[in-house]
Length: 236
Image (cartoon, rainbow, N blue to C red; front, side, top):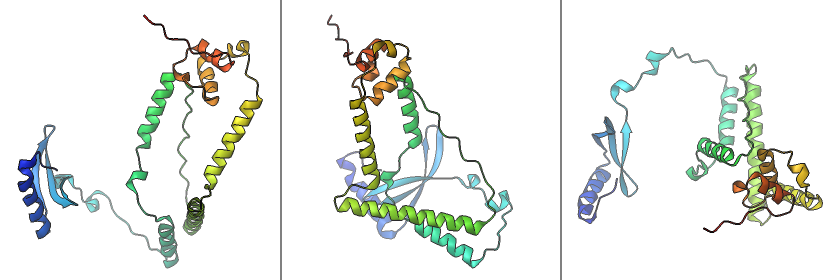
């Protein structure tokens, strides 16, 4: 929440300073998109922030919804679970999290637009019955520790000027691919004509041919066979 102009600066400053010094928050109702909301106005940093709340009848008591049962736990199980939490703990950076679902949808749309092959996602893992809780917890702890050690080693190598393992591996794969592409002879047009446009586009992607997304089927064949391929734009 910010003031609309300079003439509201003093009012805004008072609304900010009063709850900030008294360490209190304001409760308000407001209408948005033809619906009334309940909200709390509080100070966050240098601004006033509004957070929406649930109405009392929207908050459900879990004890009335389900019958909660607590199981008895051994001290060793609790300690192992705490070790797992500690092993998975790290500094949280909100910039590292993004909407991966939206990114996959956009990639799917782009792939369909360009005629590229769309690979099906892996099916979700099937649920398994945990027969030995301690063994499962201990295995998770060891996996988390191993991953943390690898990340730490890569960060240390990066600070010393050496590329991390996954970057070195990716670079090596790129070099191998480039070497193979250099050694291989371009395919003949007669061989490429038997392929669909989707298959041609996939080959153009592997060969990193520029402008492939807007090429026609014939242009893709010419570009892959080493005979050029982009038609010159007609000037009207």
